[in-house]
Amino acid sequence: MIFIDNEGHNNPKLNLALEEYILRHFDASTDYLLFYINAPSIIIGRNQNTLEEINQEYIEANHIEVVRRVSGGGAVYHDLGNLNFSFITNHDGKSISNFKKFTAPVIRVLNDMGVSAELKGRNDILVKDQKISGTAQFSTGKRMISHGTLLFDTDMSEVVKALQVKMSKIQSKGHKSVRSRVANISEFLNAPMAMEDFKKQLLTGLYEASEPFETYKLTESEWKAVHDLKAEKYDLWDWNYGRSPKFNIQRNKRFPVGEIDLRIFVEKGRISEFKVFGDFFGRQPVSDLENLLIGVPYDKLEITKKLEDVSIQDYFGTIEKSDFLDLVYGND
Image (tube, rainbow, N blue to C red):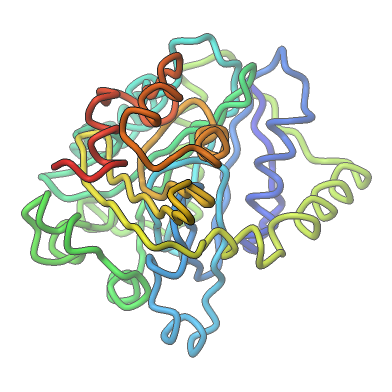
């Protein structure tokens, strides 16, 4: 495995561009590890409706960046007290949605530090039932990213102010607030530790479980390509905000795989727009599913026929097709 040095960059758009560039352009026969720390920002899941996840007024007043990532899952708040880790590896067909495989080495190192961490739920690392990390994945088919946050010394008051926590999520998890269920790793350490020391100790611990790591610094031309990707994608309003459609039907339900929120525009009995939002994880881009239903009559039998040969689990994870069809057409 090769450790990629991001050279201390804190710009979230640049760091996400770097991560994607490594995924798509670095040697596919090698595994990579990337650490990065972002300035205050909200990182939106690939399939989320940005404006419904954030407190726009607060974000604008406090100059907090909003950036969409390529992986699914929910919106998260980043600041200089949060360390992000990213494993970039081959996709063997079994690793997608296998969060245990990629969190296990991190959990082991945390336990070695005296932090009794464990993986719980879909993709969260908890200590004493308080969340210290969330993880997500993205696959190109041959290569994949498994990345996550490590809340080390994050300003928790900002998490609450910057994010809009949906009632469906609060009710499904039985939580009264974000603050009551998240915690910083620093709270569980036996002695105070600086972020840089934590980062070094985590990296050293990961070294010990693997072949000796090599550290790589990007060339000038590689950094130029990363900056180009940032400018062409992550700097754009269309990427970060632009999925919000017009709709005259909204259907929303929280499943074990996450929330699925449908926005459907029906004109003269046919579907003219179909957008899927949510914090689910899937192997295939939901845009393929969205496009498939354009022009189809808004009729359950017609929609069922259109999706007859479609694997719904490719897009959402473990969900029955009948449950998805009920959601599309309005049966609870």
